[in-house]
Image (cartoon, rainbow, N blue to C red; front, side):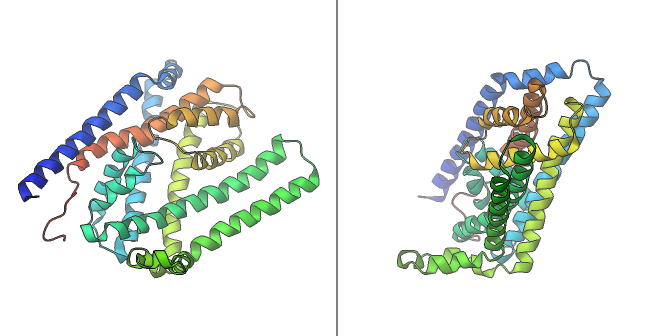
Length: 325
């Protein structure tokens, strides 16, 4: 394929991605009754208060994704050093592709196409390390929250509860030990004959030292804290009377359940809303407010970044060039 044909095909793919993304977003926003419920709840609230609270949540959204960009930049330091701005471009572009791909798989493509072609598969492996770090924290805090939830709301025999706590501790330790020894995964893959020929792609796993893994999971913890704070702020604001500890517990459980369910970002709002209502019904009967909070977080954290990311889609490098190759 000639260089001119590559440029034409590349432009066609980019335009198709952007049009597809906007079409998906438009139809989902128009059909989203939950967002209408959210606007209904805000009718009797002073405009200054609305702007302040929503402004804080939107600001935290940018902090969240800038932290992810910082993590991505750090992950790439072993592979292909990139600038912080380049990391931001790739993160937001990945969010655009993630909205219409199952389990956010498009996010990987959106990022690695900013890398030179020969480093893209290794980039996917490096991104997986960051995703595993985020998953570890989701599971650890989710397991702790599960124990508190069972203790408070589910009648259970004392022996069974002790067994649950013991299982939760083992569960948490497993994920933490596995993460901080992720090089073991490299050894496991090398033990299989049919995977050895691909070792140049996953050998990057053996390069991450515990100190580096600790820094990566620190980024993950900061993101978890920011994301949780968004839920905390909105629930305190729109569902008065909830205890702070209950909001934290339910939010951690919500993250745990969401991570275990396969989903599509655009339809994830339905799953989030149903899950949130089922969890929060133990502490409040204001189901409409719970759904509205969840839908607004979905809009702010998923849809707005995806729209912003359409600009960076046009910077994707599908075929590479002589310099990057």
